[in-house]
Amino acid sequence: MSLGQYAVYAILLLLALFAVGPILLFAVDALKTPSELAASPLGLPADPQWHNFVDAWQQANMGAGLRNSAVIVICTALGVCAIAACAAYAMSRLRVPGSNLLVYYLLFATSLPIQLFLVPLFYLWTSLGLYDSLLGLVIIFWAVFSPFATLLVRSFMVGLPKEYEDAARVARHTGLPLREVVSRAEAEARRLPKLLSDVIKYCHQQHQADHPPH
Image (cartoon, rainbow, N blue to C red; front, side, top):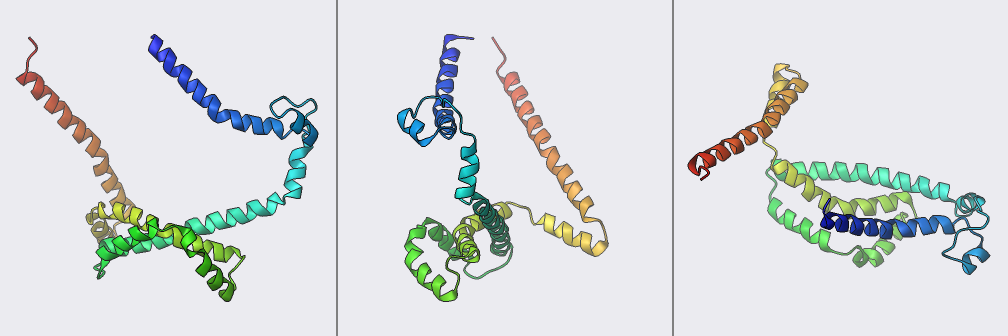
């Protein structure tokens, strides 16, 4: 390897140590007593206190926190996917009046900070009985993440050929298995990279033929 490559690897190694170093320091400090941590925050523990992890888990009630986090993440993900899929399909396939204005509205909604709605949300959620509840938090996450997800799914569905849907409708009415329709579409899609490579190869050969080496 050249000297430049050694320099690049050295810089990458330093950046990796810079990123992993704090995590290793936290792991080492977690094995110390409070007095030992105050006396030597960067040193190794003289007597590793492995029970610190058990004490932290029990005192912080981390089991309930992880359970609540799992419920919030799963419900939020499923709800956002359902909302975004339905809204994006309607905006990209159906003739919805004012769909273009709706796109601008979603772009505007994604740019607004959530802190702008904290005070009205507090009063509204308190009156509805949703304050300090998992359902209330999940609904807020649905409202926060659905606009961007809708725009993302819509951009994908706009580029998706409508012929796929027509093929699915034909398959439903003629009895042809939808799996066979999808497999044929996938086979055609797999031919595209080969077609592109053939076109690039042909252009390269034509360029060599027009500009022979001297």
